[in-house]
Length: 195
Image 1: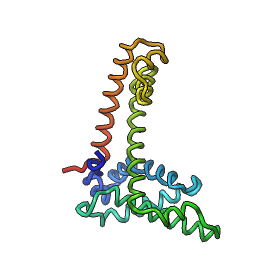
Image 2: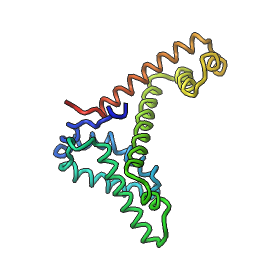
Image 3: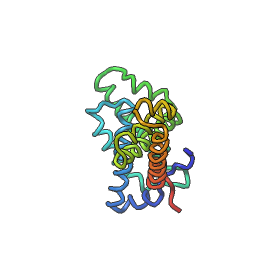
Image 4: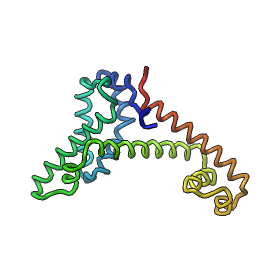
């Protein structure tokens, strides 16, 4: 599945010259970039500045991005990695100490960072889909689905939520269908390459 997750080519091309496409790009990727910055270990007090540096670099570099040489997310990983290295180097010099996060970047390979970003991206999409599901369903329907994700069977869920097994099956099926459809929509909207 991960090999199918490709950023939409036309969005990237449009974002170079179209402010509304750039806004759409920011909507899709801005929160994720901020999330990754924090996950990497950049302090929240510095995260906005580093995110702005990354977004500025992306805006400047989109003109030179060539999708025939590779997918967007590995390229994005490189931009994030370089900005983080620059930040940690600057902080290490300023604080005159060895920062553990900087040391991590010295020893971590690009493929390790790409794997981490891919895992975080999948988690990010899952969170987005769950948020949408919670807007549509309420109460026990969402609880049934979340408990099923924890590995509980229908009987255990029914006992915990004090509802019948048949209700558990129906609620789980409805929420799962909605969740799967939302994941497909997010992947289509945010990742697939347009033809």
